[in-house]
Length: 378
Ligand SMILES: *Cc1c(COP(=O)(O)O)cnc(C)c1O
Image (cartoon, rainbow, N blue to C red; front, side):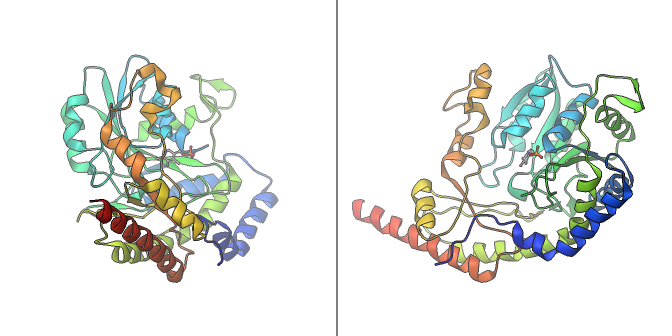
């Protein structure tokens, strides 16, 4: 049987080939490759998309997070609250700024940071709460913003996985003080290489970011601060503009396929499917299920020619890179449980409903087998 990979970007690019080629030719003919008209246009279009006043293009998603912290003057001696359950980039950005990530456990239903647990993690050193909208579903922002306002903290969104997702009708990227976006190729809106951006309504922050991304310079060869080279180049901006037109349609498609999974996998013993609160409209960057025998489920799918991924196998606090924090197994049990049980099933706007049906059938097959094996031993 034909194999079904976890993610294939070729169909998307085949579909857009003519427009992408045109965008490439336009940039080639312009003879201008860094900080030009394409970037300006993309920034304006993406800011509008996120309902934000400003967008500042940068080199990638992690730089977007890092530069927000730098621009806010968050660094040495400061603490930033981060989810324990996230991709390590969220933590690394805090570390690169010189600050310390202080992790807070997720809500096991949504996998996102649990607002009820944030207050206990706040100290006099806390400067910001970094919220990650994991798998494309927004975190419960209203209580988080309320806590932040009460303590005078910035709210930074890691919107790398949530392009277009909404919370009570408000779009991801415009909910906190600033939001970091990744346009890594596999994200819902992906470049043909690395790219990222920050959205914000804070004019001063946007100005600072433009300085920081370009060597700390506003006027060429005049350096106000020790900045970086982290720019979103003209070619990627032009390609992203082509794809931005398709993002909403792709997200609609993702929602339809996710709905198919939700229907096909509900009420299965031992299988946890995603929970969507009534205020949330996710964009399903990842369709994540949980099962106690995750590795066996993954193997079963692999034997059926179906690709799947684990997001993520090791939580940041157990990575050797964070040995300095002296956290151990048991420090963040909910996060550890999610990392031990999570499996991401194929979900991409270019998948056919028949592909999803095939995955559903294989998952049901495994889960029901596993359940009858358990009943025998019970
Ligand atoms: C992809 C991702 C990032 C990093 O983005 P890059 O563009 O790869 O640097 C950060 N946070 C989360 C949650 C991500 O998924």
